[in-house]
Image 1 (tube, one colour):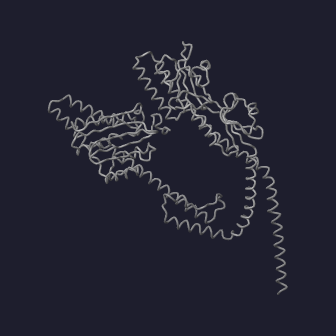
Image 2 (cartoon, rainbow, N blue to C red):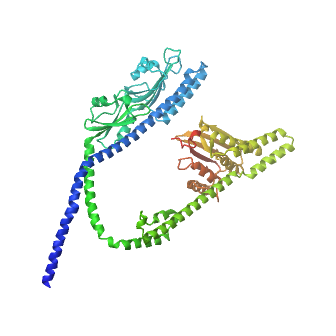
Image 3 (tube, helix red, strand yellow):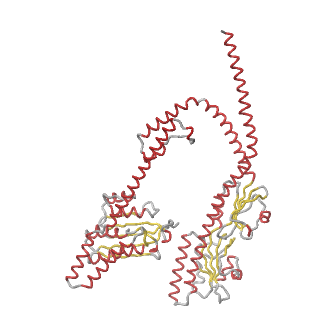
Length: 609
C-alpha cells in the first residue's frame, strides 16, 4: 500500500512538472513574443492617440477664440450703425447732436459691458463737440498713444483690421491710471469716397491676458505649449518652448495652410489651427519626450493586461462546470426581481443575455428570448401610455388657456348696453372695437412664442376695456427699455397677471389702485415687473403660492392661472425662479418675471447666449 501511494505521488509530481513546462511553452513565451511586438506598436499607437487628443483640444481652443473674436467683429459691425447716426448724418441742431451722442455713448457702454470688452475707443475729427471727451471719444491726434499713425490707418480704410498692441497708454479718465497694457484690437477707419482722410477710426480691445489665460487653461499638460502667430507668421501671444521659431516659420506656407495641419519640427510635433475670424495661427507644440513617457505607461498597462488575461483564462476554466447553474440562477433572479420593480423605469435593465448566433441557441436562450420580448412589449405599452398622458395634459392646458373669464365678457357687454341705452353710441362703438381687437389678437396667435410688443398690446387692450368697466377705480403705466419689446415671450403671460391684480387687489382697496408694468434688461434676462399698491397677500397664502411656483408644474387644484403662466415661462427661462412674488399686506404686491433674451430668428434655434 505504501509502495502504491509512493508510485501515484511520483506520477502526479511528474504530471505537475510537465504541466508547468507546457504552461511555460504555451503561455509565457507567447507573452514575451507579443510583448516585444507590442513595444514596436505602442509608440505609434500612443503618438496617434495623443496627437488626436491634443488636436481635439486645440480645435476646441480655436473655436473658443473664434467665438470671442466673432463677438468683437459683430460688435464692430454694430458700431458702424452707431457711427452713422452720430457722425455721418447731415448736420442737425446742437441739442439733437447732444441727444444722439448721449444715446450712442450709452449704447457703446452697454455693448462693452455685455461682452466684457477692455475698451471701446473712437477717434474723430475735431469738428464735433464730443471729439475730445476723454472717455470713449478722442481726437485723431491721440492715435499716437497707441503707437500707430493716421497715415497707416488710411492705407487700410473701410475694412476690419486685427492687431496686437503692446505697452499702450490711453488717456482713459475712467481708469485713472497710467499703466501700460497689452491689447488685442479690431479696428476700422471709415473714409467716404469723396474725402481724402478718414471720418473716424474706432478700436474694440480685449486684454491680451484674457487670451493668455485661455491658452494656459487649455494646455493638456505642462509640457504641451500653445501660442499665436499673425498672418506674417510673427509671434504675437505666448512663446515657443520646444521648436525654434525660425525653423517653424520656414516650414509654414500660410497661403496653402488648411484649417488644421500637423508636422514634425525639431524634437516635437507641431499642430497648427487657422482661426476662421482673424486668420491667425494657433500653434500647439507636443514634445516627443511627452509621447515617449506616455508610451512607457501604455506598455506597462499592456504587459499587465496580458498577464492578467492569462491568469483570468486559467481561473475561469475552473468555473466552467458551474455555467449551467449560473444561467438558471440568473433567469430565476431576473424574473423574481421583475415582479417588484417599476417597469417603466427599469424594464430595460431586466434583459436576459442571448447568444448572437441562432444556431447555438439552447432552451435557456429561447426562454430568454420570450422573456425579453415580453419586457420589450411592456416597455412599448408604458411608452404609449406616457405619450397619451402627456397628450391629455397638453390638451387640458390648451383647453384651460382657451377659456376667457366670462365675467369679463359679461361686464363689457353690459357696459356696451348701458352706453347704448344712455345714447352714448360713440363710447359703445369704441368698446366694441376694443373688445373685437382683443379677442382677434388672442385667437390669431398660433405660435407658442410671440414678440413682447404684441403681448403688451394684448395687455393694454385688456386694461383699456377694464378701465371703461371700472371707471375711476385704477390707473396703470408701462415703461419699456429700448428694443426690449422685440424679444419673444410665451403667449398670454402678462394679461393673466394683470387680471389677478384687478381681481385680488382692486375690490378690497379703498383708494385708487395703481398698476405699474416695467420691462428692463438684467444681465442675460428680460426682467418684467408688475407692481400694485393693493391689499397684498397674506403670508400663509404667499408661501403656498411660492411652493407651487418652485415646483414649475401646473397645479389644476389651486393657483391654476399663475402656475400655468409659471410653467410656460420656465420652458424659455434658465432662471431657477422664473416668477418671483413679494408682497406686504395692505401695502402691495410685486411680481418679477425673468425670461431669456430670445430673438425671433432664434425661436426654433435655441436661446441667446
